[in-house]
Image 1: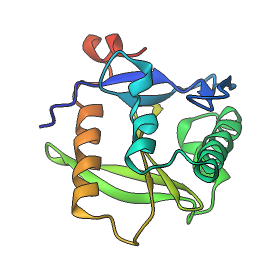
Image 2 (image 1 turned 135 degrees about the horizontal axis):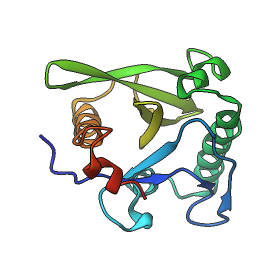
Image 3 (image 1 turned 180 degrees about the vertical axis):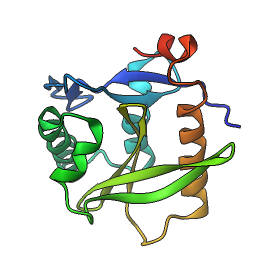
Image 4 (image 1 turned 90 degrees about the vertical axis):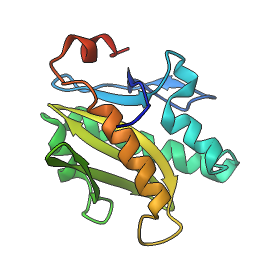
Length: 169
């Protein structure tokens, strides 16, 4: 199992850390950002930018476009999986699967230019948990391990469990 102790922040703004502004969030489901601390600045999709040196002007624009595009489509969805109707299969598709117990959880990838954001569906909600660049067609072993560790953390607590609900921030 993973050593990530998960916390989930509501995806309610774009532009972190600079030029942050609030977005409309869906009414029928929630979108969360995975973190391993109570410090919002440590949300994985934010810290992943540092890992990939995604802090120059070009990447800042692409990251913002990726999340702005997603944020404009989400309020149009009645349920989380409706998001597939707003993207082509090349832009949003199953990229990986993580074994948890006896089942495999599908991991989806949303792309914008060379950027990728990974997500999973948890109950009726979405969790965004990894931002990376596409340097090759196949997911490397180290990237697959990072995806697996984070997905296992997301599903560490049952969705209807009080411990899971306590971790929603």
